[in-house]
Length: 149
Image (cartoon, helix red, strand yellow):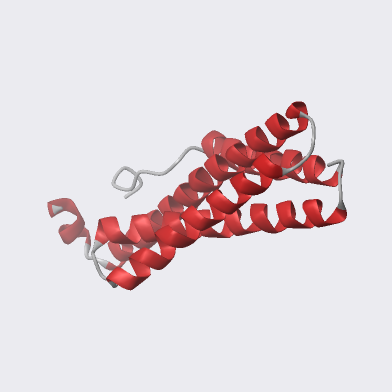
């Protein structure tokens, strides 16, 4: 049965979690040390959190849609609109913030690293979940059924 279910390697899973943790760390350190007003800092923290949650939602939506188109067109609009709005507002906040270009570059790169690692983590977690479900399903089948598949 182990040969029937493809799984990510332990090294890959560790790399994904390390990258996600590193992205969170560099984002947090950039936001904590951000010069400027508390209002700017609060806006950016909310923007990063909004982007993070919508990236997970979008990742799930895309994966669910690949399996079966069960969501309504309105949900499609909500998921894509939320992600687009989160990215646009956070980008706008970064653009208008009165900090040095070096700070802006650091915040943009760490923000994009966070979004990228979020999509990778979501996919890795979903792959593991689907592999577990498939293994459970295969283990309930008779040995002759498994040999025929």
